[in-house]
Length: 398
Image (cartoon, rainbow, N blue to C red):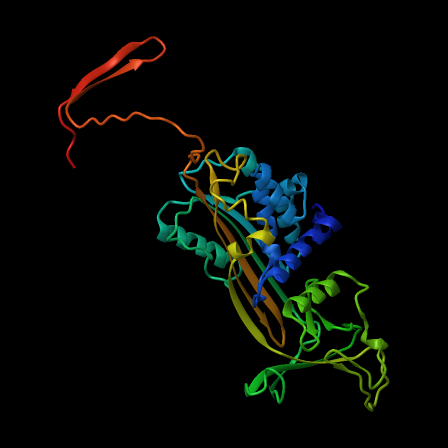
């Protein structure tokens, strides 16, 4: 049996950083942060699109993904293979094409095995098939493909990502009524409490970040910003903390009575001696869903040119001109006393372009109207040989 390829083996440090930076740039560019989302669900789709694009379309996609052309060709398959070595993570990629487009065999050769399917052209049947794929590849967390099948669709690229982990130290369920702050007046809320016995809390001037360890090599980080800090700035700090070991400082460096954002250091009496850091946590349960129209984030995701019918160039993807007409993501997350689970299905729909070039130069044209009986013929052009000739007495009736 061969050695499994891990995610850290499959992706270089630079590629991991590129994926993370896509998440950062995308989320912090939004006017409002989504309740749940996945930049990683978008990243391999941008890579797959880039391998089929040329010119400015390809350059824009590669810049957004933070990779080069060589990396884009191998990334989707490598990422899929690596995800298989981590039971807590499930990742699937797929492409479906309709009869109006002919996929380039070199492009499909770079896609993961068994990733290419067909669209029938029957909107209801195609929706049912793609909904089933979404549900199957997220363990039922997401039951539908986030596309409008009432619109013309000739090609679909999709990813399905799910994460499931059980806490190393479970929380206890509790009820809590918040007396002040934005949640005051909500009444009793479902709260969670736990004491984590490790160095898991880091603090900085503007934010504090808690790491909650789970099994399957999964951590969930919670970031709390100071009063008045914009959500995008809190997200930025959280991504910093997740990607930079030097971010902030350990809460173990705080003295008794000292404060940080949302953090207070106290002391108490106990029967047994303390053997390591202790972090008392009070948080809340949550179950969140989001439906995102990624076309609103086209600039951050490198989809501006790809979505332009006249400028999109996917010459290495399909024989016919195509462009992006829909880009959407649906996602869900659940944080409970025992663990965390989340899923995201991301879909990019493409449609065959009209296939004509807009006129740019002035022409003079003569017109003729065949509005009475006329003759016709067919000839062999190279030799001038007439093959068929006839007369049209009247047109066919409907």
